[in-house]
Image 1 (cartoon, helix red, strand yellow):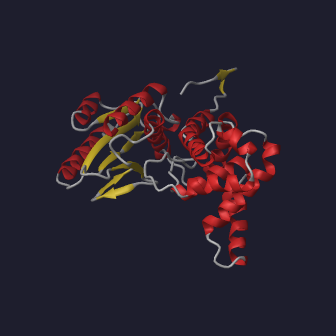
Image 2: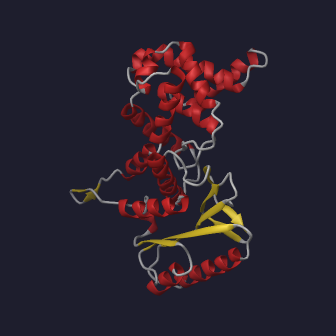
Image 3: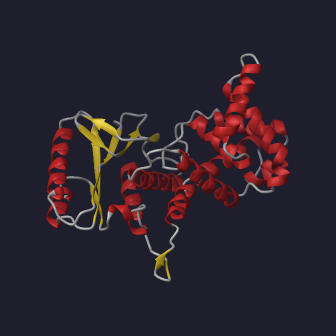
Length: 321
């Protein structure tokens, strides 16, 4: 990422770059909600106009329609480190972010209290009643549900989410790049290609004796098998040592083990190191789908640069198509 040097001091706001990138991946979800609102109201107007003009019952119907969508081919919504929310939680957070701060810490306890006081009130019913009432009551104060307004709110909410999540590690930046690539495809095509949906693992996974830092499963509804994408990440802060050879040996062993697995795997490696043997880079690259080598100290790495992101977008597009 580019430094911003003023009087010999780097004042660059790196966190804003990453959070903005992640917030932009919420745009397909925003557009999807807009389409749902048009279906419910039979209106040609924007989501902003529909919400500003709607009654409580109409807003409730829109929100409920979003909750109840069983189509797997839906866009995703993420927390501050790129982990994907399950659809009901995504709907709750999205509509909450429009009108209320801290939905998990402040709004969820109120909804839980409702459910205790009203017999057999379902969680979804309590959430939808609450969200529709809040949007209707305060829409004249917020004045806008346009994307650029919502985007600023989402950036703020994602930053709060990130602060509340312990153990923010390097893999979160790689996961954000992955979900960016997936959502870029969805934003262009409105689907996930030949797959019905994509599941991005929220944390490291184990396959046999191998730990995979970032991974995703491309899920098919037809005769095609599900496909797994594995992204191991390796870093090195020091200038010397045999780490590059050891990592190459680990990757080669993992590839050998995975070739005997009944599942189908794509493998992309991410190396973040100032110096790494070029011969080992070539060796790894010849045995996997793709390799990203960021020539920097891992302490300075804050995410994919634009060129690398475009290459990842293209690679993910090839898998989906």
